[in-house]
Structures are given as C-alpha cells and as structure tokens.
Image (cartoon, rainbow, N blue to C red; front, side, top):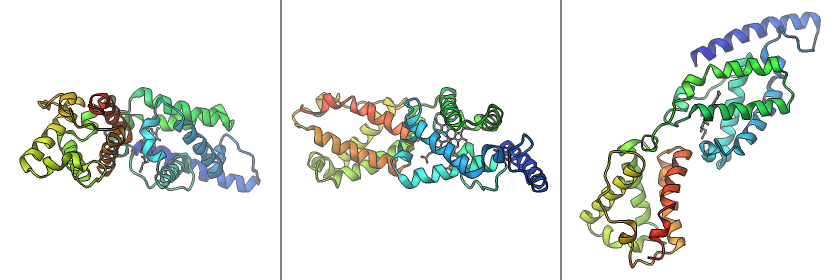
Length: 278
Ligand code: HEM
C-alpha cells in the first residue's frame, strides 16, 4: 500500500504539472505528459470502467463467490464501488481520497490465489477494452495495480482458517444453536437436547468437531454417521433448508467471507440425502 501511495503521489505531482501547462495552452486534448487520471478521462470515465468491471466480476464464475455478499447487499456494493473508484482515482493522480482499508487488511484470510488475481485483472482489462482505453494507459494502470499483488495474494488458505479456526467455528455454532432453538420451524427436533445441558453441550462439541474436521482442522468427529443420527426423524427438505438458513445467518453475523460460507454450505448440502427423509 505504501508503494501504491508513492505511485499515487508521483502521479499526482505529474498531474499538477500537466494541469498548469494545460491552462497555458488551453489544450483539452489528452497528451502523454498528462496525469494518468486525466488521460483515462477523469472520474466519469473511471466510474464507467469500474461499473463494467463489477458487472464482469459478477458474471465470472472463477471469482464471483468472493463477492457474493457484496452482490447481495446494495449498500455494501455501493461502498465497494466507491472505494474502487476512489482508489483508482487517487492512485492515478485524481483528487479522490481512498478511505477504505489497506489491501493487506481487506484481503486477509480470503485465500486469494494468483489465478483469482489474474482472473480479476482479466475482467478489468475487458472493461478497459470496452471503453477503448489505449494500451499505454491500460499498461500504466495495470502496473500500478500489480504493485498491490503481494498484499492481496496469499495463496490457498484452508477453509478451517478462513472460518476462524476452532474459536471462529465455536462462536458460529453457539450462535447457530441459539437460532435453531428460537426457530419454530425446526426447534421441536432439538427440544430434548435444549432441556438437557450435558446433551446440548455434546451436540455443540460434535458440531464443532464435524465442521472442524470437514474444513481441514485437527478436530476429530466422534459422533454418529448422519444417516444414523437422523434415523426416524422424518426431516423434510423445508426443515433442512430452515436449518441451513439459520446457519447462514450465524456465518454472516460472524463475518465469515462469502466464498468460505458457500464452501461450507456446499459441504453440508452434500449431507442432505443422508438427513432428509430418514
Ligand atoms: C489489484 C487488485 C485489487 C484491488 C485494487 C482491490 C481493491 C479492493 C478494495 C478497495 C476493497 C475495499 C476495501 C474496504 O472495504 O475498505 C476490496 C475488497 C474486497 N476485495 Fe479486492 N482488490 C483487488 C483484488 C482482489 C481479488 C483478486 C479478489 C478475489 C478474487 C478480491 C476480493 C475482494 C473482496 C471479496 C472484497 C470485500 C468486498 C465486500 O464484501 O465488501 N480483491 N478490494
């Protein structure tokens, strides 16, 4: 980020120099000595490129799971859009101020891999090409963004770590048990456990260990198979979905990143056949 700020500052200085020479010549045509910001077309053009970029990312199955939460929440998406516009504006010499998190913090524990980074850059290039941004400006912008790569790409991170390890999983499961107990659609199944603290604790430990083990932790699940545990309960699809909804709400509450959430819910979805209709 520091390096990016430096690039931004250098570009900003170049921009100031160009602006004063513009005044003299009254020249509105972009010249190679203008700031990248001006050569890109300023805020309006950068905003149009970012909007197209967001559309491209949303349709890109290689990376859109990362952005599922933002895509589902208009306020969050607007914030991300503004952050991206301001970041590019500032880094290229505009007067925009980026007020978001630094790149290391905002991408920590997401498990962004080189292939994800490249996919995102491809989506940006498609947007830049759509607006016919010339090669020189495109290269300059991509070079500035490439300098952020070491802060963003961590390589594969275990689902377990992305869920927050044992502490993160335990917090989610605690909250989830509370939600299920209050959910009239399914709480009858858990009434006996809810009335017996030792049984409830055993259920909690089993759930934490099951999720821990399935996501790559060192926990060992010692409970029954899913088929045996749900035998005779006659659980239907709607009830299974209600439980998934409760778990999703707990994962959201604990800020589990959308890609990790989707991976965990997909793994649980694989157990549906052993749980429903037993
Ligand atoms: C040079 C490339 C990149 C830049 C400039 C960039 C920039 C940003 C910015 C400015 C934010 C907002 C920070 C905040 O909320 O304060 C952000 C968030 C985020 N970035 Fe990146 N990013 C890049 C690469 C990637 C890649 C490769 C991925 C994954 C494929 C990714 C995934 C995300 C996600 C999921 C968020 C959070 C969105 C939300 O839910 O609000 N980013 N990024």
